[in-house]
Amino acid sequence: MKKIIFLFFILFIFNSCSNELITVVDEYNPLYQVRAIPGNASIKINFWSGILASDFAGFNLYISTTQTFTNALLNSSGGYPTIPFSTHARSNITLQFPTTLTYNNGTLYYVSVTAYGTNDLAEGGKIETRIDSIISVVPRPESTTGTTGFTITPNQKVDAAAGVIKSYGVQSNFDAITVFTNNNITTTSESYAVVGLYIASNGSSLYKLWINPSGGNTTATHSRANDCNTI
Image 1 (tube, one colour):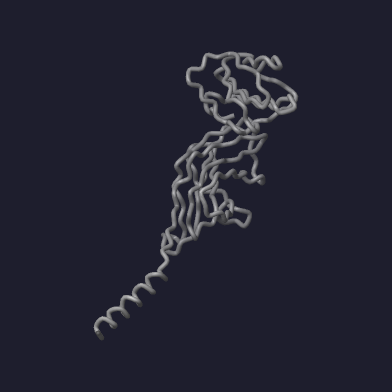
Image 2 (tube, rainbow, N blue to C red):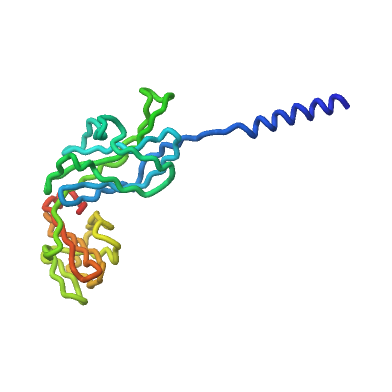
């Protein structure tokens, strides 16, 4: 009887201790579905983050006029990460590149983003995801008064002024689609749609059009189509 009571006591202690064990799993998965969003002398980057880490500190932004990066951009305090961030969950994120820098319209840039954290067990006391995506982007002006690159017949059709055109359907805003996927497109005309988004190309230039809810237009263009299919 004493042996049975002693065995029960040992099992009780083991079970109580095991319930107090907490395993923390830090996940620094690479960022995915990264895309650049050009603006008027500005750049944003959009991506999905799957960071589930207790020591996650934020995101590092990279930019260069070549496909080789030296260092990430520093934050306002002169350190890393470039953009402090505290959301520890899988989410879609859009970050603005620091407005303290100059981004010239018509210039080809390459950008990327990584997740960054501090970890005493990692070499140098920091941890950073690898650069999986290097995205080309060309800042460009935007206009709400013209239709450059397009000929619009209200309520009927939208034609490419020269070259080909692709409709991306109804979109919530001008930046919803940024990449022109020219898979042997031969179409020169698309149906007109309010809040419809269109991208046209003549081979050397890209043109973008969004018909806003009031029927007005937002347009943008750049002449680096051979180097960058983002507009």
